[in-house]
Image (tube, rainbow, N blue to C red; front, side, top):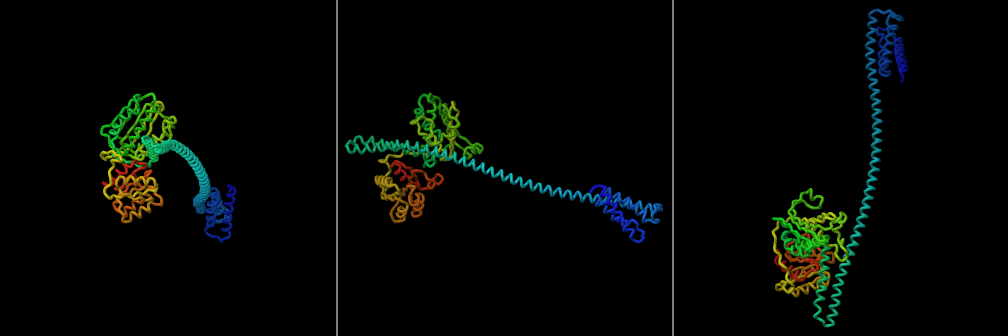
Length: 533
């Protein structure tokens, strides 16, 4: 409302109060009805109209209601009363105006607060929609990226599978050709009566079979499913024992340096596999230096903290390192990422299977260690094996005798042979018979359990791990030991199944042989079981 309109409203309030006062009989209170009108003017119309109304009310009260009426010729006391009325009501008007203005501001603040809350709610709703849109887009991006990565991994997997099967088929076909060819010629020479030539064909078939077994062992090493025979080993002693062989292997054009460490810790590894790994590394180094160079084999004790091991998929602790460094052609970062892939090789066809480093990697990882490759093109390559420290003392290992010298059975000792492959089962039974054992054959776990739960004497259980009928070799062994506590068990398998190894260790009174194996090793393992707890 404008100021003139508010002043007009104030005049009307005062006139209304004067009219009411005039309608009353003459009293000694000329100002009585003006006070509510002035309070209302100050509260509703503001400070200025309220002051104007106060002055008008004082004039009307003095002119109309203080005797003598209709004149301003008042007595002194009447002027004092009028002045007091005016001052008091000016104060009342100011206070009422302040209260009214405060209420107006409060109402405005409440309106502003409501508008702010509405704006905040709208902003929050907009932010929520934007956030939902962003999350939806992020989920779409993540899903798309995941699909792309899955497709890439599948492509790489199929490429690796194709490379693996192609290389495996090529190598195995060559070895099978040697076996089948030797056996065919063996039959021909037998038919011709040329017995003096049989030995070389037998040796040819046996050599091809051994190469095929070595190939499958390398594949198992890469997949970390190879059955290992770990024992405490000192790497300095192992390298020293192999030094002359390694010098002859790399040739005179390459200088071989061996840097040992005094007081080197022991490590728990399969010595034969570690020797093969070191030989493979040296062969790769030799091939990387066709014009000669320097090959360094170095060992060290290392305490690796969590900051070092976290990014290398290792556990913090004490390790023994074996590093092989060459000054050859080196490798690019792209090649380093692929060096552990099976059948991946940069060598020309016929000069490498591509399984050397993959076998090294699988063996070291299965032994609880890690492999790291550092290389610079044109400068050389370093391959480091990190193997966990072992506090176990070194032990002595005797060579296995030939079958003719293999330990014989004691009188009456009986072996239960369980294998679903009839040929393997027959061969084991015949060899055990040659060694003096009484052999009982079973083709599955159900048949073997029936024998074990009968009164037939059984001193040893020789069982394949993978058996048909829903019960594997480990489960058969557990059931057999429940029926015959202390039963000695020898597992034979094409790969080391987790169900048997149980974190890489066998229980007391159990041994393992990995197919294919020499028959004299079977005899030695049985005799070892006799002495086991």
